[in-house]
Amino acid sequence: MKKIAIIGGTGKEGKGLAYRWAKHGHSVVIGSRSVEKAQIAADEINALVTGDGKDKVVGLENSQAADWCDYVVMTVPYEAHADMLCNLKEIIKGKILIDVTVPLVPPKVHLVHVPKGGSAGLEAQAILGDETPVVMAFQNISYERLFKENDIDCDVLVCGTSKQAREAVLELVREGGMTCWDAGPLANSIVIEGLTSVLIYINKNYGSREAGIKITGVNR
Ligand SMILES: NC(=O)c1ccc[n+]([C@@H]2O[C@H](COP(=O)([O-])OP(=O)(O)OC[C@H]3O[C@@H](n4cnc5c(N)ncnc54)[C@H](OP(=O)(O)O)[C@@H]3O)[C@@H](O)[C@H]2O)c1
Picture (cartoon, rainbow, N blue to C red):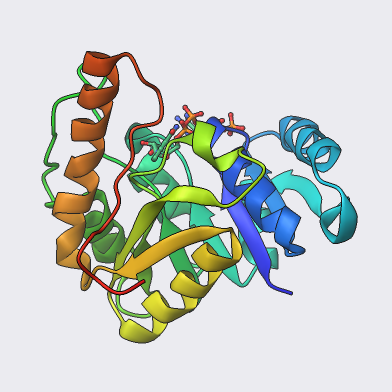
């Protein structure tokens, strides 16, 4: 079983991902600036999971969580993204970073914002350097969907620096009960991240909360 740490895992998206991987039986650590808050979130998820995944989630401070794991998942708001990566850079060297961040600018989160570095993913790679592969995933899947009991009926696009790292993340996404696609190198994160604002706009316009994407025309 894999060791996954979720930085900022006390938030909506992080808890949803923790739930999916704990259900699969992986060991998950919720990271937070506060160990107490992390443990409360871990207890919430443990209460939802039955069977092999029961009590697989614990809470730690972010840097301890990052040190413990093999896979580091980043689920913090964009405004905290660069500082968090700088703080964790040495600890996560050589591990795969699975970055879920979208460079939204509140309050107009339904408008695409292209950050200075091109995308949150490209900015993460620039901060971490070549030794730490960055893979972007889950930008287009709302936290509400992650808490569904069964497999999720929308797709996850995965892009990142190395094919090998993308393959490892694709396996983790499938284990979370989601269909996923290798969407190529990290530069493609510009579009994948931007698509999130399009989905938020669609949610707003059509009174929904769970707009997602599905790739057609390819053998599943
Ligand atoms: N929500 C969604 O449906 C969704 C979908 C796709 C992608 N995303 C992306 O995933 C990321 C997380 O989304 P979310 O909705 O889970 O966010 P969130 O609930 O607003 O925040 C997640 C966690 O980040 C930590 N955090 C907040 N401000 C911080 C700061 N200044 N410095 C350090 N840590 C801070 C907090 O943890 P502690 O207080 O415990 O430290 C918080 O619980 C975002 O980049 C978002 O765009 C979200």
